[in-house]
Image 1 (cartoon, helix red, strand yellow):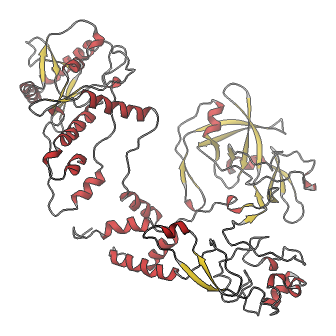
Image 2 (tube, helix red, strand yellow; image 1 turned 180 degrees about the horizontal axis):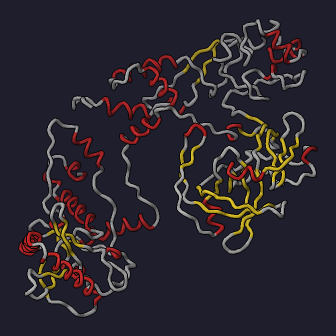
Image 3 (spheres, rainbow, N blue to C red; image 1 turned 90 degrees about the horizontal axis):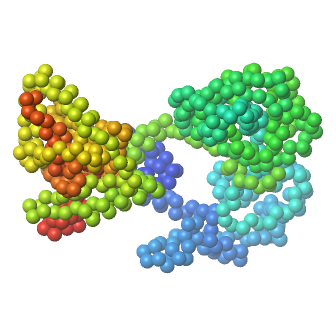
Amino acid sequence: MNLPVDQWDALAIPIIVAKLPTITQQAWGMSRTTNQIPPLADLLAFLETRAHSLVGIVWRTMESKPKSDGKTATLQYRGTSQADHKRPGSRLMRTNLIATTPGHCQFCNDASHQIGNCTRLLACSPAERFTLLKGSNLCFNCLKPGHSTQACGSTNCRICNGRHHTLLCRSSPAQTPPLQEAEPGWHPTTCNRVILLATAQIRILNGFGDIDSCRALCDPGSQVSLMSTRYFNQLALRKQKSALQIQGVGSGNRSYTNGRAVLRIFSTVNASLGLDVEFYIINKIISAIPVAPIMENCWQHLRNLPLADPKFGETGVIDALLGSDVWGQLLADGIVRGVLDDPVAQNTQLGWVVFGPAEATVHNYKAEQSMALRVEAPDERVDDLLHRLFESKEIDMAKGDKLAAVDLCECIFMSTHKRFDDGSYCVQIPFTPDAPPLGNSHQMALRQFHQLERKLASNSELRQRYVAFMREYEQLGHMHPIQHNSGDPSQAYYIPHHAVMAKFRVVFNASAKTSNGISLNDTQLAGPPIQDLLLNLLLRFRQHRIAFTADVEKMFRQVKVDERHRQWQQILWRESSDQPIRTYQLATVTYGTTSGTYLAVRAMQQCGRDNSYKLSDELRARRR
């Protein structure tokens, strides 16, 4: 990024901004006029300025009520408490407000009542009230002076949730009873209006030959038909591979299908219908609908109709979606309407589907449950990538069996490792407690060794490098010849080996299957990933002007394997075909085994812990 090493603004700013409220993040973004990386001082100055501008704002939720004696009232900001005030170092922000005389009406200037109880105003219709108050310089949302409707912090209309006072609502009766003053605090928006989506009960033939039924959403706005993974698994049918990308409004949340299947659907009211539909399988289609229950039998125009979903007013799970690919085949002539704001019935091959506005039987349900809106900025993907770049992901210690395996692997290491006088470490292979017995691996290893010999015989340069590698392996004491044991084959494992040419080395294949299909790697614990995170390495690399790197030569082979476990690391080898094939045991941790990486890294960490007392920063030495 062409920044000096001693400047960390580019790292600190994304981390700080991610902790800010969304509205403050947006304000910070709007304040930037160039694409250059800003200095940290600019962000701190912006936050200080914004904090000062917010000091005079009084949140709607207050712990103490304003005094009604016309004197100065002290209001406490939401999110603070007396306990926070008493905490050392905490600051409790307060603001002093001059309370308006409680008996002063802003409409008729009568001191005996407030505007909400004004008989002159209540005698008028909502339209007349609006006309009378139009020139009074009052906020139409709270009927108080001093600010505009757009800047008002009071709640909306309690009838239609509009941005006006309840007395001005055109949906309210002409004569509105006096309203009591609301208790200060946070009042969620309430609403009784529900928008019904067209649903139908369909029947599907499952894998057992029985008829299964589910609730389907009729959505001509969808290009394909969908089915939930949960319901498809319940049908016990086969599916084909598919990875179709599904996008919603604004292309915000993207998801992918995990298969597709062609299923035949039937109607619950039309016995002659049998339609093949291609369903794309997705984890979840939509939340349960409708968001609040309604009365199905309160509309005269819907009575005596053979409904596609007789329980369209009950909240239920949607397991299928019928898109525009089949909607044209399902449509039929006929549509029934009621009065204004009544749901509409559309005739289809599945029966009459009902959709449109309705009134919930549960009053004052939370309106935010009825609509989910996601606004995605054009550069949101960039922000997400930056957030993930600076986020340190912790190791995902899964639950249950995985966590138990991690603990067991560490327990085996701590109870079995030992250190020799020369400073080297010796470990045992961590086998799974329920490891299956191994089959005969000698014949498999012998067959692959003969293949290797034929390959080496045809390439003299490869043979020379292979022989030199194996000689060094034996000279360093990393493998020893033994007598071939023709006893129980399940008590030994012969590892096949071959050459890798990119950077020449001999690779040992501990995943080779024995006669019963079990390999050595199938019987070992992998251990947790205990290597340091790459992000931590990069951050440490940039903390100092000069960085040192080092490599542990033959790192895996620096750690010895207990003699009692070397029988599981045997190989076949000879330098020329005129020599007898001999059996060797590998005396060190072998690269290519399941537990090899864990054992090598864990031994190195143990070495740091055992020698940490020799360094000035003992805690740092232990961590590294």
